[in-house]
Length: 144
Image (tube, rainbow, N blue to C red; front, top):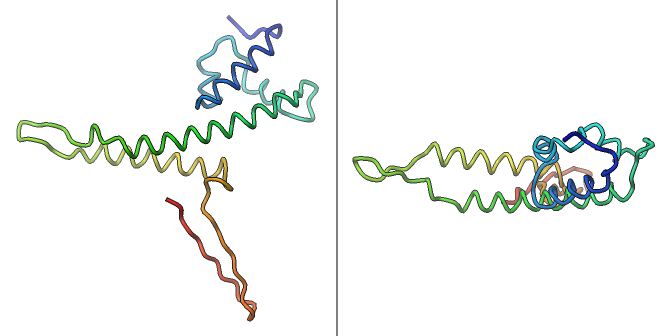
């Protein structure tokens, strides 16, 4: 079934609900033939467009925050999951470094995305101090 303008509000609600549960807009639209294109969604979010919907924009922004929080939870779950780190061979247990490296990559990718999606909440804290002599000191703390 293709996108139908008659059920626009139901579609908006479905998108917001799915994003709030941790799905990206791309994955939502890829898995729903009844959903509009990404361009139409952005028209609904664009203040300069006739199809602009302020309520949808507010709900979308809230859902993006919830999506980021879900991604943060994913980081913890990936880091805590060691179920496949050791595999059994004929010679006994062996550490599977490929699985560990893949988990590290998954965590790092999410950390990078979070730092850009919500820099105030999940980005590196950057503190700038200026002393009396006028020298600028930049201190960078990495939150783990």
